[in-house]
Image (cartoon, rainbow, N blue to C red; front, side, top):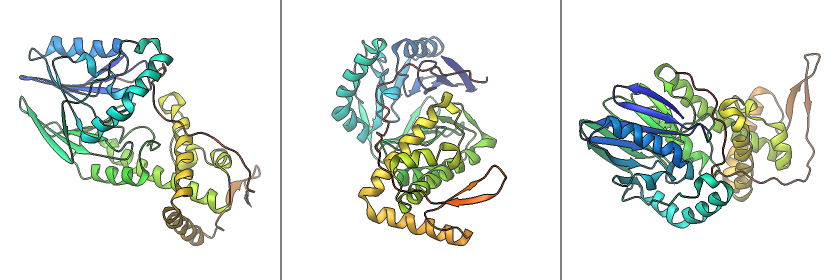
Length: 340
């Protein structure tokens, strides 16, 4: 596990066991607030030990940013803390949590002792939490999941964005349009640091570019799906034709996991467009308008040949099925090396 101090009393912990998932801790004279838990008990205990040794008031609150296992499975270890979440988080843990935990235990022996901890306090919309001179604003931020929230530390201008901001937006369990609205809201906040749900901390000079890049990715990804459907391409064609780099993001983040997340985004969007014709039609109109403006024919893809010339080809329709990936039970992954 990697630990990083980003202000006098704010720490970020990054898992070395699963997908560089992060947890945060804010230390105050009246106790500590922990934002998200790490999924594996060993690392969560390290977070608790570190915080309690430095904060005589103990850990008063734990905030779940959303219901996913990698952000909540450590909750049962915070026995004296009150757990806070959005009301939908509690609902989703009640309806999906136990089944997911049973599967996770079967897949990974390290999770055998984990017990589902439900929130004690829930809210809708927005909640302001004050403790020891610190003010935290918890705001509903759907997109990655329906129940997602962000946590803004006003005095330090630090945003714990959870999975609203990560190396590639992931909307299989959420909604791309909701994510776009949530990302647009973040642009209105005065920010010094953004703590992603996975990966490295985003510094002040990188924040605007990071948010805009996520917005750009979601639009390009949806345009790619619409283009494929205009050309009567299958889901397998879609994945082959549009890798993550074609949508403006690097494939190396999170040790390459982002390419899998991107493929799942494509498949999920393809299936949703297939069921929501109005949404598909709106996106198709936008793609055709952009193609007309640039002089391309809708439903065609332009490639560069070895001689450096542009050639236009039309894909034929093929059959094929692929299953969208869902983040459920965390599997052991190498987190790589974080820069201090």
